[in-house]
Image (cartoon, rainbow, N blue to C red; front, side, top):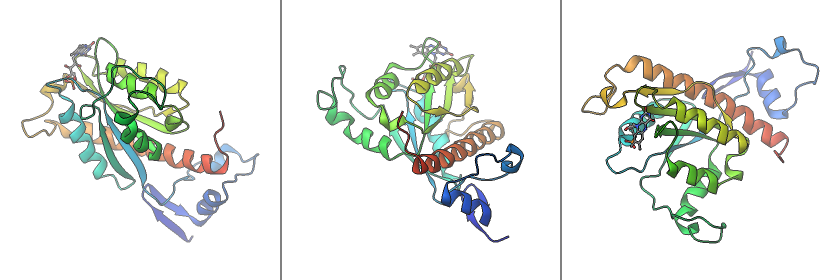
Length: 231
Ligand SMILES: Cc1cc2nc3c(=O)[nH]c(=O)nc-3n(C[C@H](O)[C@H](O)[C@H](O)COP(=O)(O)O)c2cc1C
């Protein structure tokens, strides 16, 4: 069967047709949909948000490793928004009020993104305040888009931070993907060159998460084009 090779898989002509028309007969049985791809041939514009701005932070090690993983994934084009590199105002007002200038660059990148990965440490069983600030400042930018996580910390590997973030993103109509990349005792898991000392597990976990993110991004992008998300 003729088809199109896309970044996240090969589409048969039937699947391209399905994607192009955006229509699936309403009574299509789930078994008929199995194996069908809802992928587009364009790479997913992925914004990686580095969620710690702490002085002396470990975040660059984890996020740089992850960005290298994303660069090897044929389905995504990644861009980084490092919250440690922006000067966020202590007080946020309206979109035209204080903080607008500092956040303008970030807001444009979030709006253009198809999908997000949040790299977050765990602070006191949750995620850093700076992340809450940028999440709360935005609204439409998250809607009907997928969010994946790379977390790190002590014993819990940042998973409690991720669970809190899932609740917040649900409120913002974002879709969080199930599989997370997590490093417990993170500082002992990377060598001096910034590479994981045992790369197989985390590299595979990153690919799985990116595959899921890619699937959701393509599905949601097609869905938004077909029917604008008005909720
Ligand atoms: C204020 C603070 C609170 C922390 N709380 C936790 C915690 O609840 N659970 C945990 O596993 N690690 C905790 N840690 C350890 C951090 O996750 C770890 O130091 C991590 O490297 C922090 O990320 P950063 O260096 O990029 O800021 C905490 C660290 C800080 C600074």
